Image (cartoon, rainbow, N blue to C red; front, top):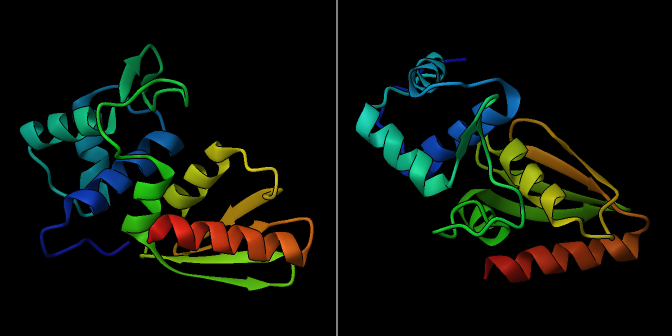
Length: 154
């Protein structure tokens, strides 16, 4: 992966933090800073502490993790609506699939937020770098999900 040369936005940095803690064990802030550096993001300890707080991350024996869905958050960061507004660029349908285009590197974050909702219309999601395929039982359900996502982004 190419290191990022310009300073990154807070939302992008926080999205990368979520990607990292979902995909590997991060036990300390130093581990998190090192993992961010590997993806081209240099961050100070103060900024990292603020991001951890903003995201509502919890630290347990297995390292940092997100709170359970029923745990209240002090901010709306991490909610589906916030995630859609921050990262989604376009939503289309093709037969029974909902295709969600995101900013580069954020498809997994958006797909995880969709999965946490437990919508009965979505059978499952598959995320790449900037594209998500959300499978629905039929084309009618795909159109419904697309409409619901677009409405949340307004």
